[in-house]
Length: 488
Image 1 (cartoon, rainbow, N blue to C red):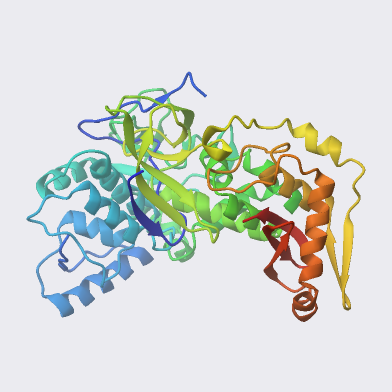
Image 2 (cartoon, rainbow, N blue to C red; image 1 turned 180 degrees about the horizontal axis):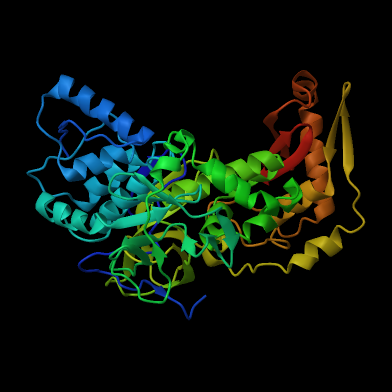
């Protein structure tokens, strides 16, 4: 498997739910029937009444002091409005932008925090870069030509306001953003979708950024005079979505179920990353809401996560393997983008629709297709119906293995109870081990680490290691609760 890995420090980048490009080398990758040298240029940015624009003018001035006064072109200006810093490198204008360069530029751009001010330009810049990522190299002249399509486009921000893609300027208030019928919406406007000004009214666009005449129109009006200065774009955009999704997270124990109420791409991304999933399970309700809201916002800023699809990879890209950009989460919540050669027939989830599609690989069968099947969810529930928990004393501290923790361990690492959310590198208990054997192994590892547990106590999260019957195990504790246990 070939991979060139680009690590993004937060959660980033997905496909837009509407977009455009002149051609496509893989118009439909999923079978639905089955499961640069640096260049820093500068200019005097025209005044815009947003925090993002004021920040950009400062960046431009700093670049001019350091690297001369050559004026930035429209493409570079958009990248700066989207979040690039004065020290970030830009590709040479004289050279065509390659897919590899576009991916690297995206990795730099999308490390930056998403604010209300840079959310609209981030969507526009991500669209242009994803077009390059999916297709062939693109000249600067062609990039500038494509940018003209952005001039009349606006998007819904997470705070319920419409703002222009080309400069981030706030246009008008729509209403509160709510999760409804599988999308974040505000009075008919959908988060992650582009809208075009057609003679004084906003209309939704199709994948070619052409207006859709479906009866939905909203008049364009300017209420800038009554907008509070708190809406200048400096605030964290994810806070707005946190207010919308908090109702789904009634308690940490319901966290995985709550993800099913949100865009499929979020649940697929978290479920495909076992290490992060285990960490997510240990978060408090507030931490979970914040983490998911931040993930959602950064993904939408990269183009949207709605209306994705799951299926088997086809030969639409040509050849026996499809070379696709694949997303995954590290245990710390950082997003990894890999361009990977994937065998045709492998199940994957497409994050969004349209140009520059990114994918999350569906969990593979452990052992490279050994025939292990996903267990019915009631099996582990029935087998543990009489298990009330185990307590372990170490000095003055009491440690707990409760039913929820044991169920999580069994569903991730036991062949009899596997829920399908693991990956090829995940380890499994021996098929002949009963859940009572797993409990005894946990107790043995705790006993081997008694001295360390007395010293560390029940504060925070940490891991223990031990060997039972010749097998080395890793055990994770969080506030004195056992929630992680697997063979190395």
